[in-house]
Length: 260
Image (cartoon, rainbow, N blue to C red; front, top):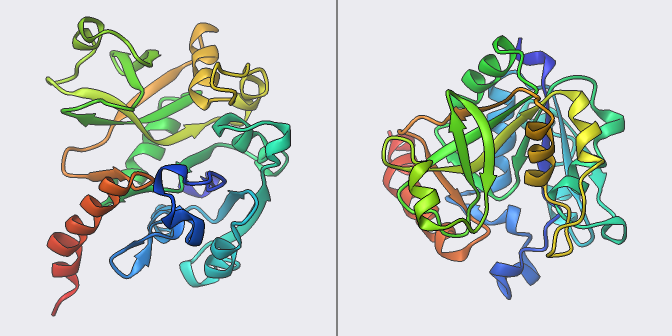
């Protein structure tokens, strides 16, 4: 089943929260242990049978191309797509550039996300296909929710994605006492591009994928949430303090597993 899915890694962002570090090193090339974070994502896609991976880049992202090259070393075929920021910024515009190349279901990963272990990728693909979902969102349960979109779920169905909601409303959407956060990965059917292209510009001046998904929910499409297992560690390493937390996790867990 999984060989029908293609991968799209979003790596066009400028990494403004990591400056001045990101002026010299693309944030997706930030090391977690001995490997850049984007390598973990490419290998995770390869491990669940994905053969084609499209990496969406913008200006000054040559480091990623020089490292991943054609993907042969990681067991996949890697191709590179360019997001022209003059035509619109944001995650929806980043994914839109992949439309001509996508043939079926595809999995989107934020290039600065670090997951470990990644066994759930295959479970998520199976869930998406068995449920014939239009979209399946990876949901990570967190005790804190600052700076993240909170997903309102009902029986695994996504009802809304909340940004800057009141604390009272956020309490109502907790799952097992935790906040369900939009962490990715996200699986889409190819027809989701119809909504991605309809997405309006946000007040921040960018086109957001979460707004695209809201359009799908409002139109009655089957948008599901997949709760990522509690034994999985996730950090958005585009934030410097979280990159340090990921590095600490690596030293305490992954590095120990590699030792004889």
